[in-house]
Each structure stands twice: as C-alpha cells, then as structure tokens.
Length: 347
Image (cartoon, rainbow, N blue to C red; front, side, top):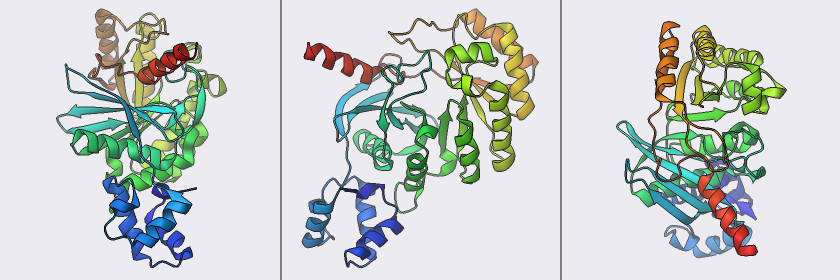
C-alpha cells in the first residue's frame, strides 16, 4: 500500500499522472492531508471514483490517541499515539512565550542505549515514516486547537539513524502549501552520528543542530552513551566544527546534569573550553527521573558551581526550563508504562 501522506506535491503529481489524473489533484490532496483529513470521503473536491481508486492502492496515515496527560503546573501536554501497526510513540506539546513547541519522536524505540534514557529500554523496533512524524505535529495541533510554531526532533529515537525519512519529513512540514513551519523554527537532536551530521550539513537546511553531549570527556561519555565508543569526543567536536563552517548555524550542546556523574568543576571547565572553541551554546538540562534508571538530578549547589565555571570560561549557556514534570515528560516513559501494562496483561 502506498503511503500517500509521505509524498511531496511533486511526487503526488507523478503518482496521479500514472493514474491518468491531472496534476492539480496533487495540490488538492496535499492540502487535505495538511488539514488532517483521514478519508477521501471528507475531500469535497476529490471525485468519488478517484477516492475509491486511491483507497484501493494507498492509505492516508493517521494516529490514534491512546493517552493524554496535561500538566497542572505549566500546561504541557504529553501524548501517547498508537500507530497503524499497534506500536506506540510519544509527542510533547510545550507552551512558551514565543509560541508552542512540539517535541516529536523519530523512531519506535531506540538502538543508541543511552544510560539515562527510557526511550532505549527494549531497543529499536522500527523507524517512523515521514507521514507518522508529520502527524505528530498535525494531530497535536488539531487536538490542542493551538498553532504549532516550533518543532524539536528530540523525542523517542535517534533522528540521524532514520536519516532519509527525517529529511523527507522536514521538507513536508516546511512546505508552503502544507503546515509551512520554517526551518529556522526546527531543531534536530543527535547523540553524535558523525556520518549523519556531515550529510545533514550538505542539505543546506536552516535548522538548528543540537548535539547530546552530556559529558566532555570520553571516559564519562562512553559510560553514558555507547555511541561515543565508536567515535570519541574529539572527533565529535571536529564534526560540529565542520557543520558550523558549512552552514553558519551555531551548534547547541544538550547537557543533562547528573549528580556525581558529569557535574564536577573539572568537567565544567572542559565543557566551557569546548563550547567557546567552536562557538556552541550549552543547554543545561535538569534530569527527569526515570524509574528504571539509577541517576539523580544534580544538586542545586553543584549546578550553581558548574554555572560559575562556565561563566568564567566565557561560555554561552542557559538552564532549560523544566516542563511537564508531573506528566511523565521524559522521553519514553508513557510508552514504557504501556509496554509494562501489556506484559502484565499477557501473564
């Protein structure tokens, strides 16, 4: 079956041409997809015969809402969606003064094995299609009734491990006849897949690349992030520099503050030196508790000391505002709860 919603307008034109249809039908279909239409019967300007033909050969992707949690503290919404094959993914809608941001998943599960993350428990199941990622944005917008102005690809999965589908999603969500979300309003987070970073730089997309660094030294980072064993911190920083030189877009370092693991003064000094060397911005992240993980958030005094060192190094940094702490906001937690409930039900 053909995934029609994963097609760009020009691809729809070619597909419809093969069915003997005029190319203007592609624009009509793309517009309906972007409005959230889930059947051809809803499309008032699409002939019934064409709708029946398309239904026989293809499908319009959609998501089924399994769970929705709304934070009583800050209004953050955590969605758990069911996919066509029964798998589940998470999306988070966060409200800021500058607009609404949606954090989307790019895979069902994850193969990267980061020690502090719930998403990787159970490994990778499969990649998401472009239409599934698009629907995370679209259905969050439709359910909330609020315009989504920013996207972060920082949910379940490693985006650069699903490279082609993520690039296709970016072009779909940015298309002026679709949701038309500007590339400068989109951030992509990677654990540091260097081949993917180099390829992304050549795409000439004006997105923000966020690198999940989480430690400035190989010993600590390799314990936290197995990806570092393939290519260490020095090679990763070189790739960041190449990306900046090619795109002119400043890199952002994601840094989860973990008590007694990556929050020492010496690590702050090294992080500050790395960031100032390549002009990167550091995003310090208060760690969210994950039931299956042993890590704890950095103590307030340690965080203050860490920040003082970064300031002394002239590093540019912010402390991320903690959102959705009462709605399992960390990546993978709702999905993990569902999996455990299903396992209990099978016993």
